Figure 1 (cartoon, rainbow, N blue to C red):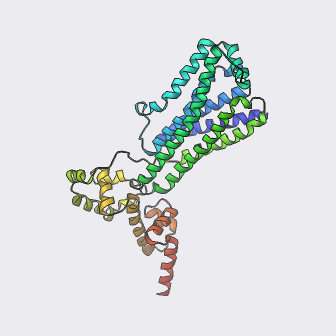
Figure 2 (cartoon, rainbow, N blue to C red):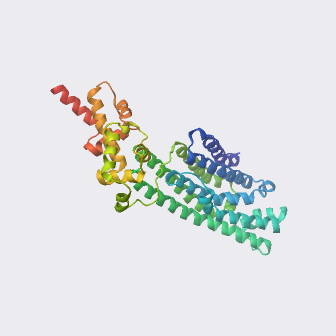
Figure 3 (tube, rainbow, N blue to C red):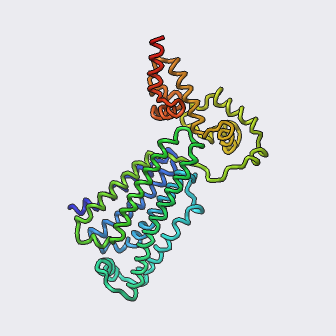
Length: 382
């Protein structure tokens, strides 16, 4: 009974998030839906685990090659998901298939060995006797063991490579994101970092278990407690954070140079346009305002808007927008004494009081709560 519970826990978690994330099309959240596909692969992987460890060898042999394939797909798929959160607008086979090529090749090689060299009995013998006891092999078993060993080695190498690539991508994105978003620069990046940290922990656990070999857990059901608990928690955390996460997209294309912008556009004409949008039309009150929105309203390219804000005002986009929101929050505080802090944060374009306080602290060296209390005391004593 204990073994059944331990084996089914990650199955339930991946199935739950596969359903939740794949039925979220109404929000048109491409990364979220793609993470749902990742969870489907995870579900197939842990169903295969269940069949292997329970054990149900006569059934497992039919999904053995699929198990190998899914295990090799996990990290490339997660890296693609991180790309969709940060720099890629959508999944495209032409762009992303290269990350799936090696797992697909190993799947073909592994499946070929089963189809060409093994019958049902020899396949079971290979999986449940030869591999667990590290028996010497020759002939068809030698081919299959070589491919199997390569799959395990590739699994470990991919884990390190894609973890490094994901952290590097997020670090580059973090440096640029404040030039694209006004309110997402805090919370969303924190969630992406948590997602990647969760992936890192899963990778470490996966590598340890891969080195130990899944065969070492066959005889002792209590040995399954640690991996079952770890992966159940990690997968739930990935699903939960992914369900909350919104894409924080930036463009990896290089910015245009000063000479190029001089050729394309007169900066002195664009600066008043930007000022008009913020000072007269108060577009900063849109809490979801992005650089792309400003570019669209100014009828120009986002690169030009970024250039003007960075060079003419000496600020990144996030700080530029939030400075206007801070000033508007001051006006609301003076004009409407009955408004509470949450209402002021909402009306001035901030996503939350925490965002208001962070921006206020950055601009005024004091939190909004303290500033408001100070102003209230001044009014009482005047």
